[in-house]
Length: 62
Image 1 (spheres, rainbow, N blue to C red):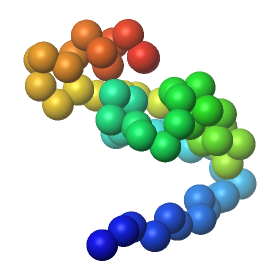
Image 2: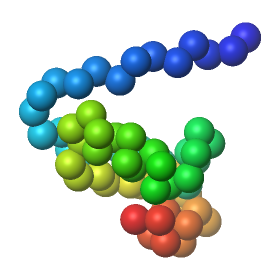
Image 3: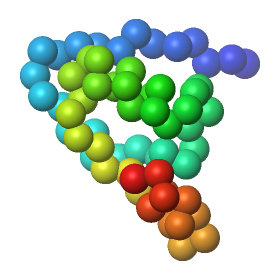
Image 4: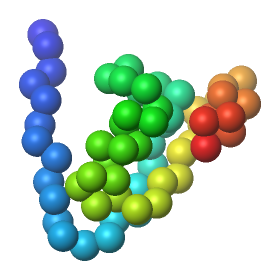
C-alpha cells in the first residue's frame, strides 16, 4: 500500500516545526526539504534523534 502525498497547507503565519527527523528524510536532500518547508512559511526547525546512536547524524544535519 503506497501513501498518497498530501498538499502542504499554507497558513500565512510563521511556523516553527518542533518535531521532525532530518536523518529519516527520503524525499530529497536536506536542503531541498528545508527550502520546500520555508516556501510554505516554516521559519524555524527543531530536529530530534530517536536513539543515542543516531544523535551524531541529527546534530550534523541540524
